[in-house]
Length: 250
Ligand code: NAD
Image (cartoon, rainbow, N blue to C red; front, side, top):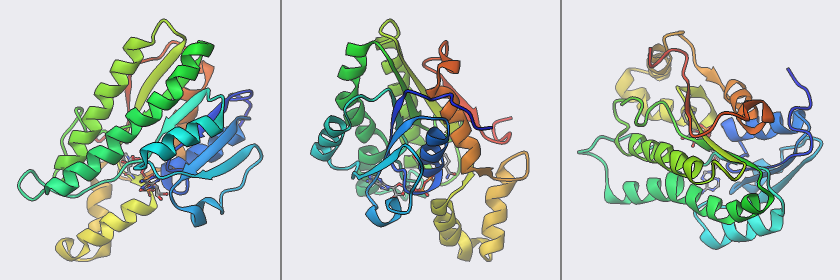
């Protein structure tokens, strides 16, 4: 359902060129927000069009680019920290390089983005922050997700810390914890698992089977939760890690 739940709000979205970030940027715009949709992929960003939506190239691994983008954006009422990467590894196969990359992108980039955006929110005594975590985090373990689950658990800790620090300043901070969502990067993980699983269909079925509902989430279903957390409807919700997983954690 589309309305005006974000009218008058300026929303900044990271990793918005595809998948959940893209769906959220479009959903925010459809709800009347001004949206700054950012991603490192300029070509895919250029395909993103909606009234009220502007795009900016931003690599979330680039500290000075994050600062510059936040400055350029001006007032930000809503920050959706969506950028993240899924490594498939165990504690024994993971590499130091994968650990560093995942913590840089999945956690440190959120800290940098928040550091750039929070002073304005504190000054205006207004802000809603939505951080992308996962059901695979401190909520539940998943096979072959050692570094990924560890970073997404850190996102929940970061979220609770920010929520606690600024609960009296009009700023809310929540995390979204999805199960498996049908996005382009899931397609890459399915392809990577195909040989071991006995084909693409079998690899996809293994992901589907994890959800008790017997299907994957759509990016739009996750975006709908992001809209709620960004909007004033969730004004009494802060510091929460909200699971949206088709029953994976039942
Ligand atoms: P995706 O992986 O399909 O797309 C990711 C987007 O991030 C791309 O547009 C890419 O260009 C961009 N990106 C990658 N590195 C970047 C960087 N350094 N700076 C800026 N942009 C960058 O998207 P997705 O599957 O929707 O995942 C988005 C988020 O949701 C991630 O944090 C992921 O961990 C999380 N998540 C996904 C699932 C799932 O099943 N797909 C489940 C739980 C959580």
